[in-house]
Length: 553
Image (cartoon, rainbow, N blue to C red; front, side):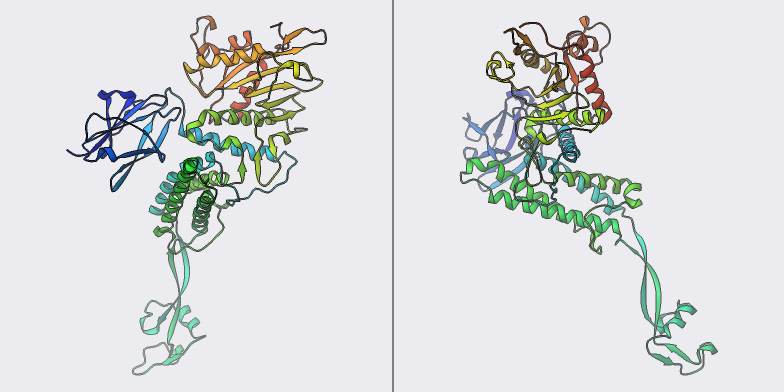
């Protein structure tokens, strides 16, 4: 019996899928996140000595009923996307990939890439408004880059390989004029100007025998004829820039691998993620260097590691795609740090909170203007750009409010201004607070990377923020201060008809429901245009109009 490894989705043997050897393609929705799955190895003579690792972390082994079987339990949690697996048998190891689907119809890998790209874009744009004037390095620096950036760069490698291979199959060429030195007896196609020009240098041969040369040459002919020939060449500026870019990216990844090795903790159990990304960084670097061995780059010289403004980068689809990848890679290797960038793909829902905040800040600056905007609270001083850990505040005087990220609301009786929670400390993801001298306004936004029925479970937090945040007045009265509370979600619903007859969670997105109760959900999805984000911000502000201090709790 041949050894084989199957996965039982949700521990259901009837839906078993072979993952090694000759893996079968998993139907969409078969292997879902948040469920518990079983890996079953059968037909292996030494199954008891086998190990199964997911992203280099060993799975929990279960007791098997047969000697040639081995079982492992796997609970991926909130992890949708491709995971790297390794089956270790005595003397051999086999690598394969398992793709998990989201528990519901929500975005995964593509959304993660979009969020990281837009976080970096917004960071650069907002940093330009800050008082800091620190340069942004393109090197590896002294600190290992955050996991989110490495995940983002890793997702670009396959696209880079496909694009460069496609260019190699049909590259742009140039006809380059070159001097060709040919003995006179072989230069049958030489033109009269080329022959006359060749008289200027070199040795002359005298004609012997019957005269065959024109009288004007007086029986002499250059020993060698210098001709101008045009040859097809791949050594163009675009290819030089492409080659230099691949070399820079490969070298950067190699440096990252060295830094991860140097930063590895003494305890092997604490260094699993570092070892994983060390190996991945080296594999990515090797793959980029393999692209440099393509015929496309054989006779290509050196150049700057960036596309210029030439027409080839705008006109040819494959070259245009490489230029777009170059922009992504440039942002990915930039010296940008922050605790929230330490997110692996499995924690997309955490990254969503930071992404939503930065998108709203960028939209507010575009909507109300940059005059007087104070973004210094968003960054920490230091080398490169470092997003502030924990709380962050961006003040927009023209709008009359500040956008706060994870603002701490402690118990109101210990706060100087008497504004806070009447139960425990709370930290909403995003808060829109009125600036001093402006009419009282507090809008609380809770970013939830959930879709469908999952939003029903998230309602409790929105209710909690709206009800528990209060203000103690001078007359000892206590009033609620949250004028509106909304969920931010990548989901979307069309609000048609009466909201009373609309089912949940679609009712939360209904415009009439939101404006009636100043409560509900607003769509904020990765990939939305800047205009769509501004419209979402306007929707929040318009729905919350009139939502000043509420009734006593």
